[in-house]
Image (tube, rainbow, N blue to C red):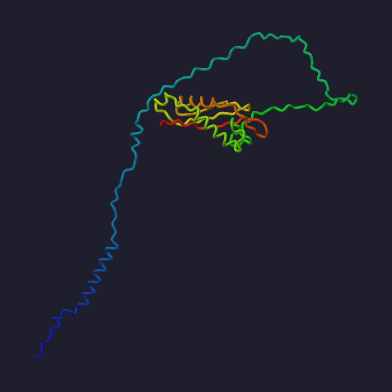
Length: 234
């Protein structure tokens, strides 16, 4: 004997309907969540100004300073004396500068103009003929010989000031001097960290011998020269 199935006892007969209903419900919830909007509460603020409080403010009293009137102009003199001009003024007669054809024309000889020597100063680096240090007359490179003899002169006459040694002062003194047109040394200027070092540098430069002056285009000129003197404690 075969068992019979009751159609009401079939669990899966309405499964498709339930699936469609559930899917529709889920879609409705998702759509509602996406379209949900929330607005902030609107607060009505009072932006009116209290004009009456400003109008009631008391204005301080100010005192007006009166400017005194300007002094009256001086009174005009009552009697005006008229002075008669009795002096006669001689008239200036301007003579004509034009010459007539009868006057002789005097020929003027050429006027010799004396040349004024200009006080020219040419730097040591660009001068044509550099100053010659005593002992460099026969050197092929007089510029290099000049600088070498300058260093020898400084080393020979160098003496560190005792007061500067006691104070521990050291540094470099920049010295600028001019070799004049007669070969002498002048216009010595210097700058250093201490007056004692500057005085020693001045003494060294003043002991330089007289040199053969530098020349530019065959004429003796002034030649400025600069050199540093370093004072260093051992």
